[in-house]
Image (cartoon, rainbow, N blue to C red; front, top):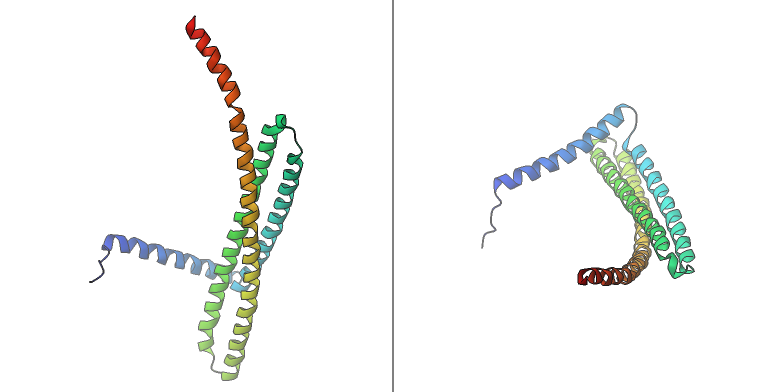
Length: 198
């Protein structure tokens, strides 16, 4: 059975978006190279930014866990204060975690572009010895990069279960607050019934 054809009106916008994204990266790299900043420089900057984001996230998580430990000892009357404090910490941690992921994605993008360019440029060599040396260097650099990226992704993944546990605790506090609303609501309803009877 032949596969159904997509209407041209759907394909054209997709092709345009793909072309636009590719040309944006190419234009960006071209502009940067004109001022002496090459893909390898961009990659180094992005790796440093990703490392900094991971360190910031680690500090956020540490601070959040300290807040949680202090909240466990609070009295029930402090539930609202505890919830507000922990929820703010949770949101900060979530944002820090997202920042780490975005930075790692940027490292991955520029490195893919760098390696692709390097691979293409191997064909420009006339000197076979230079080409072989450059090809070996590319292979070794890719291998080191894969190890580095794997470490970054492992650190990124390790944040998810901590964040999920934190979210569970914040939700539990929130729901405890919700449960405490029933007493004032019941009193208000009793008062309203009394007024209506008059």
